[in-house]
Structures are given as C-alpha cells and as structure tokens.
Image 1: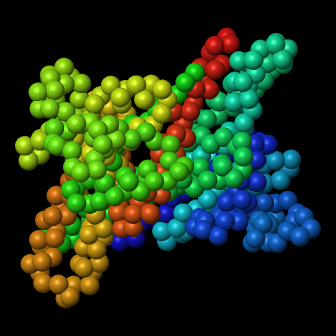
Image 2: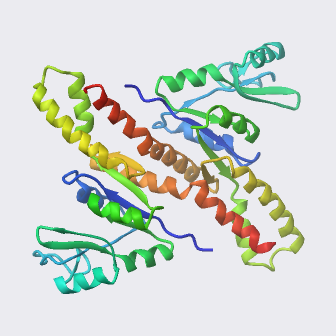
Image 3: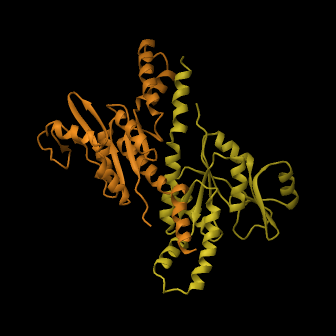
Length: 205
Length: 205
C-alpha cells in the first residue's frame, strides 16, 4: 500500500524571507520534497526558464485555467496573476511524494480550504521576539515606536491562526532545519502510521 | 514569560530496544532533554550508582512514596518496584526544560492520565514492516509462522492507540534522529508558540 505524500505549505508575512528559506531547503541534497512550480502571467525576467522558475502563461490561458478549476490557489499582484496548478500537486501526492508550496498568505487560505490535512507552516519574522526584548528593556525606544511595532505584530500574529506550526526566521539555516524536522515528525504521527499497519492485517483476515 | 518544558515519553513493547535508543539519545552532546531517573527497590548491580542509574530505595520507602502520591507511574516486576518520582518531573517542566521518560507501556498509560499533553512516542519493532514484506512475498514462510507473527503484530499495533507518534526502531541512529525531530517540531506547534506572542501584547494593552 502506497502512503500518500504530504502537502507542505510555507507562508508568512511578505518580506519575511519565504523565498530564501525555500531556496535553501531545495539546495540541500537530502531534501525529498517536490517543489510545486507556480504559474504566472508576468513576463520572464532575464535568466528565468519556463517550467523551472515559473510556468509562463498568457492572461487568457490563465483565466481559462481559473474557470476550469485548475488552480489550487491564485492571486493578482500589480496586474499579474500568480497561482499553483492543482493537477501537479494532486498527482505528486498520489505518487506518495511530499509537495512543497511557498505562497502568500491569501493563497495559503485558499489551499487550507481544499487541503485541510496539509501541513501549514507560518514563517514568523524575528522582529516578533525582538519586540519582546524591546518591551522588556523599555527606555531604549520611544513609546510611539513600540506602539507602531505592536500594531504590526498584532496583525502578524492574527495571521498565524490558520497554521499548524510557527517557525521563526531568525537564521535561515535554523529555520530550514526546523521545517524539515516538522515534516519528518509529521510522517511519524500515529494517525498516519497506524492505518498502514492495520490495513496490512486486514488484508490477511 | 517562561515556556513550560515538554514531557517526552518513550515506550513500546518489551524488547524493542527502548533502553538502547535512550542511551544513544543522551550520548549526543546537543541533546537538551533532562532524563528522569527511575526509582527501584531492586539491589544495585555492580557499577550502578545511586542517583545516576536509579534511585535505590527500600520496599518500605517505595510504598510510602506510593501512598503519598509521589510517583508519576510505577509497576512491579519480578518482586521489585520500578517507578518515576513525580516531583522531579514537575519541577523540571516548570523550569522550562524538556523531561524524557523511558518506561514500559503500563507506565506510559498511567502517565497519559496525569499528563494528557505529554508527547507520547511509541517505539515500534521493525518486525512490523518485515511482516509486511513477508506477506507480500508469500511462499518463503509457512502459513502458521505468518499467522503467529500476525497475532503478535495485532497486539503491538493495539498498544499504539495511546501514542502521538510511532517511530520504527530499524536503525538506532535513525530512530534517535526521528525522536529529536518530533520534539523540535512540537516546540514549533502554533498552539504552543501563539500564546507566548499574544501574552506579550496583552501585557502592553
């Protein structure tokens, strides 16, 4: 019996360093996740390769895929569409491989609705812990500055709600290590392992 | 705000290699768990040190501790008591350190009742996956042999119910790595991390 792969979703506030962490993870030779390449209507930049960096599509093609339900999630930024083709994700999971998505928070919300069992990891800015230190050592910052930072922090913390795990991006290497530990742990969850054994016995009854 | 430590419980069928895995974990320099030393009424063997290998107690002392509720779990084997002193566990968790117990399955059941939030890891014998291979390659084993192994496997799988994670002890090093990944992942769970941030903001309201 083949075990289905895990859908791993890495997201977090913009500017937190999702892309850097993702690139680092895929630079490790022992990483066994499949990276889901995004689709976009923006033009390729110099050096970008279709099917490697993105799948480049026309606006018409993209909207056609939307209407056919072929996108797991999508969003429009500054006039261009970005999205995740759903067929690749489903097929790769069926093949028993883990799929890794690195997407914006709005996209993650859409994915949660379709894959409630996915592994949702929130990459948190180290500024949150820094804020804690600042509050504790009051006097080095103006009250107004702290207040602004707290409003921002409140917004960031609210975004966490949807996620299963929170990884602070203080050091890229450390964040990658934690993400890989989370995936490894998830594969050992009793709810995942037990049915495999049970089915093995059922077959023989 | 100090985060409470995790209670990590490693258990599994007898003979699965719990002690070997535990020793290997504590031989790693980067392991940051505190090992909870068991208490026993059996006599020290040559080379065993009180307070290092076990806390050695008389039968009267042990029964006195039982009646005072000072044992997190205990059991009697071949005429001797074995148990886990509860004060050390509680205090160490309060200090924010992770406590590691390596105990028998009956003990793990008792601990689950008192610490439902503990991290319960079941060390599974590799014979379970071996069984799967045997079934698949039928013909190399007699039916009776497979049937016996299946009855045993069924009993082992039933024991898993109580646990959060299942780690197969095929290679000691690999099992240790998985256990450490599980603990690292648990520290990143949103339910653990989020309240810390929220409280930080509450303080300032």
